[in-house]
Image (cartoon, rainbow, N blue to C red; front, side, top):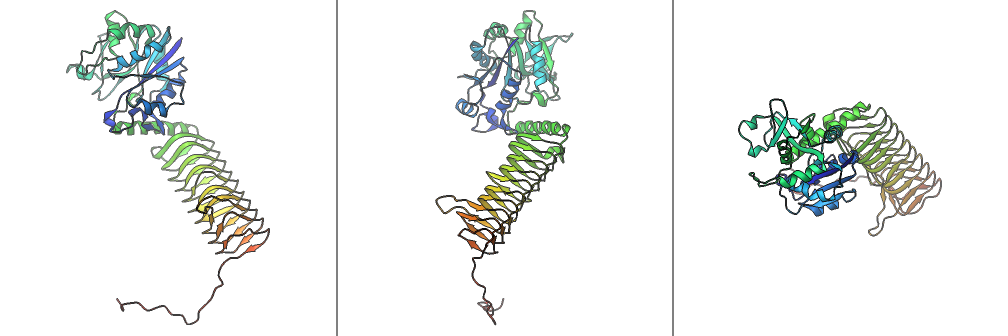
Length: 456
């Protein structure tokens, strides 16, 4: 069997009240359309055709990495008209599956079954809703045979009482689309060519139309406004959290977890509340992530602890490291095994050596640090001279006293020592002590100046 997939993504989405095309709004860090494309790819079709219209330039720019046949629908005249635009590019003998770019949560297993049902003729995906308002209704005879689909705006009062609805997702042999779509009329309130009308045409010829039912309403929920976007987001996050928990990850509260990209976890991983994962994040065995952390494109090795309120972006954290609380690790930070970055510390393009410590209130930028280094509270690497960035090199076993200023370019050799409160502008040789501060003077009998204007 040859399978080709048509994804309809030409709508404007006016209810989103956005300049961004509806299908480019995101769920879990990926656009709605990208979710549908990825599901389509998992079906291993011969080709994927995406019909676009409103904001087509933006769509093409956002998703140019995918191997897609992009089809432009110049006029949005309905779903039937949209599918017709793609038909000339579909190879003969194919079964065609029609998906929607704003319906991102349809399960792969559901679509696989729908395609199986469509080998000999049209097959439709339906769902039963508590509130079917706005959806086309499925009309059946007393034997349960599918007769037609009637749109909500065109349905009678009694037909609106039907709770089984048309999801819009259907599959059929290519020849059925070629036979029926040219015969679809637009004599309805919207003056549009409805794709589901091919079902009525097939039934009128005495053909049996197969159907299958979605497992839940959320599986077929289309996104038309911000409320529905939020509903889809929470369902997507719930699914991801459940998958992780089944794999052995401890999640403090699945409703307070956001994965906006990909998350790979080892054994015995623990994730507290309100954690956000963005981009590609990998957590090793026995990693603990504290509450209210944000990790973006981060690799964390075994036995590391990320304490609460920490923000890590484009960072590698070694085995048994400690980060935070309230730490910010920026682009290019690499922590070797056993390193420690404490509270209110910011790093950028910094290599922190094995078992080295930057515990409090420091900025370490553009720095290469050896092993067993201790950085005192309030230490700053001055890496920018107003024009260029410069690096600071710190050897093994170096001790930097509190409130020190290291002015790059600078090298402090192994076992070097910087006295607290020093501003260091020259290299420090191995084992030397650098002191750069004014000599203390104590003024005897000093008194504070009196207040101006008298007592309050």
